[in-house]
Image (cartoon, rainbow, N blue to C red; front, side):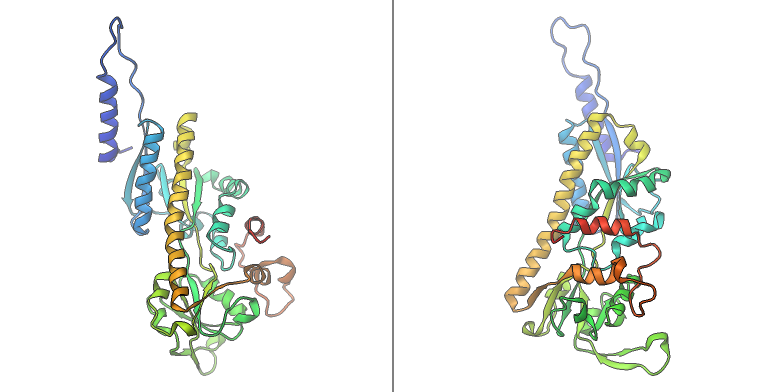
Length: 358
């Protein structure tokens, strides 16, 4: 395994200090040199800069907690889904979509309206039961997940109303990002008139006229006025519409986790002490990374309120129940949403059990 320049310099410095320490009078030989363990951590260059910053803080924590015995060599670059199985890294951040390439169950975590908020996502996806089920499935691939992280979400801005309950979505004309086909299907099943657009084009669509193609593309297009758009907090703050006409919906409908995974063999090679250090450093990484995103969002919510925008908490459990509860999704019930084939009901139930509102 190659060692990066920063990690190599630190390892050599520690080794030199250990080997050159002066002997006490009367001793015959120096203390045995400590073994420095180096683990590579791959951070995809497509991730937010704050992930790299927190990865560096994670490496510093591991070095501090271990007295320099455990070195995390942080690298950036392309991170394919099989980066851990292919031996490119000992540790790696992977998007949920990448994990879904290895195990289709992960697509469940990107379905809309699963989480009340960032805290709910973090509690549920880092629970022992859920991580245990995922790691059992990943074991043949030699991967072990250490943590799931909240890394932001898209939200809704509407002039139509509060969109609190399932029935509120019926008839809205919603410009949604094209990043998740199942998300579009969910909104359609709630009765929304879905207009797919790129993320960059959507902020300009609020109040604009758009052509809605009929289902199956049969018949003439219908001209509609877009009254709801899917945006992140930065885009919401940049909107030029009259804030007193806007509802910002804290839907968390597009919250998909970021995962920290490890090569199983690399983990197995660590001593109990090194694993304990890694675990404590991961706890710090979880807290630090989520604090960055949640503080950023909280500041945006406050600013929107200050401008006169109504910030709305939805009845998320009601929406989720209509979509995913098995008792409400009978195949013979026309018009009901049927979850995709990959949908893992047990994982869904675990997630819901961690809702603060349960």
